[in-house]
Length: 225
Image 1 (spheres, rainbow, N blue to C red):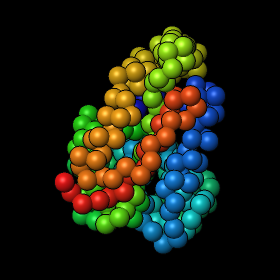
Image 2: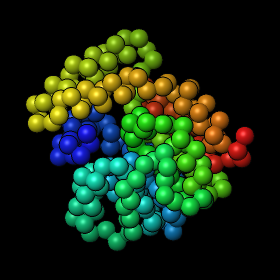
Image 3: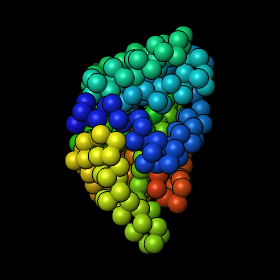
Image 4: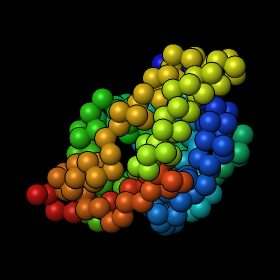
């Protein structure tokens, strides 16, 4: 599905979030607090927006993992056009079973990818396994606002307006209907926090952004329970 919407993915992200996604990504990078020389993993790297921001913020080494070959090809094009000197290695793979050694990464980030995973718990276990002791995980994910009026407006936008915009821009309407459904059915923040804690990821902060339409989780690798 993601291979099929690669061409319109970035433009629709900007349009459907009213360009708020850019600010959300910067907040996530600030929370990641990556340092020069560290090794970062960008999970569900997609078209590479988070990796590009990270490369601009520090002289770090970045590995991206994603299932979609077309999305990764777009990331490679962006990277080469920017003439960046930082290291960016790409791996096609599943976030629930990552081909990396234990304790490989200092920091890990995932933006708008967790809700599309078949097994979120398996990914969180893999995140803990592949992070170094004290390593940090930052998750940025869309969410349904808790305030009733805002929630109703948001759900109407997702179910009616978003598929229409996708079709108008030449995107796959069915794919974007799926993306809307994936937001609506994604577990609430408290549930995600509990899942992290149960898998040895100590939640440092959990923050609602823009009236709760997006959520930022920051966790660190702690002792396994």
